[in-house]
Amino acid sequence: MRPFLASLRRHRRLVKDLVGRDLRARYVGSSMGFFWSVVFPVINLFVYMFVFRTVLNTRWSDKMGAQEVALLMLAGVIVWHAFAEGTSRMTNTLVENSNLIQKVVFPAETLPVYLTLSSLVNMGIGIAVAILAVTWFDFFPPVHLERPIGVSISLVCLPLLALLQGIFMLGLGFLLATLNLFLRDTFHVIGVLLTVWMFTTPIFYPAFLVEKAGFGWILAANPMHWLVDSYREVLIYGDWPRPELLAGFALAAALTLLAGSTFFMAQKPRFPDLL
Image (cartoon, rainbow, N blue to C red; front, side):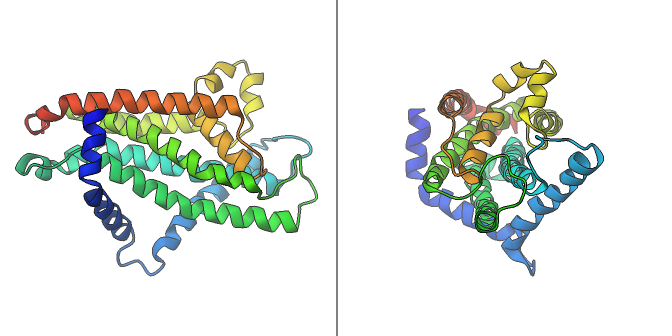
């Protein structure tokens, strides 16, 4: 961890420049620009609402109306989209930037870092939209609500949640990017695994259905469930994250970063040969 942190301090300006370049390159030539960061999760929300709420008739509870379900799904989609996009891009980042790593003395550890930060910045736009939606329903509450919704002082937890999410993503990114050099199928496998992971995380259905089916162990072993649940408590219900879930995710994030960065830095001298 120490060489990794020291390298980041030395190259923080480079990381900042890479994040800015990536954010600009996402929508270069696009007339709507960063507005696409809002459009994508909203379109996904409508698709999943149609599938799970209309077609499959998945019920969260008898007291919960469509508006509350939509907010719960929106928060989950925004967080998951940032996680999945960042993880997928980091897995292949060393291969995509092989020219930099092979020809010059380039700090390869900055590549997963800037992709993580770029995903989190992009997610921030979606979170701002979610906060506006919750504020609207706070002033004009729907008829059917299981719990009161609204913004509160608990929003101060958002930077902490984003930080822990970034640590977890970065640790996974280091692990997967390095593994992808040894086994190039990693990039393709992770795409399938992310889809499986998404549907085993209670984003489009309530967690109690998993427990009712006898698969509660999936929730107990799923860090993304802990993270999504924490975001929902803060964003939608104006409540504090559940301490056990927040502590569990913080521990998982720290261990993942420790393992990922150690593996990455240990194999870094071999990157030019592996590429």
